Image 1: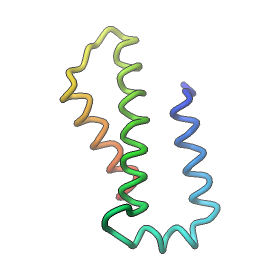
Image 2: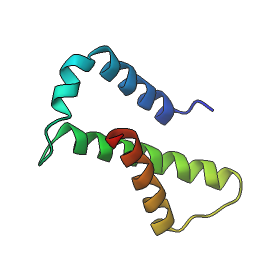
Image 3: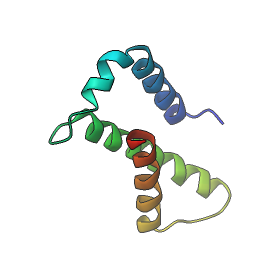
Image 4: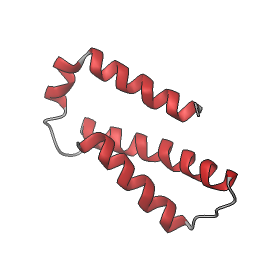
Length: 81
């Protein structure tokens, strides 16, 4: 299923891959306002919205804590791997 959030995720991935020589160096920095933290937060919001819609479409209501945990775990897996 292509949703706006999956298209945004794919667009960011394509851009980072195209310019990977530069961005690999950027990912080495860890700290305040790092690219790693910004992308993790960006993906967290996209994934949280996407999960909420997907689960509600099949009649499953996730608690706020469940949704936050799942989105945070998935966003970390995308960025930190």
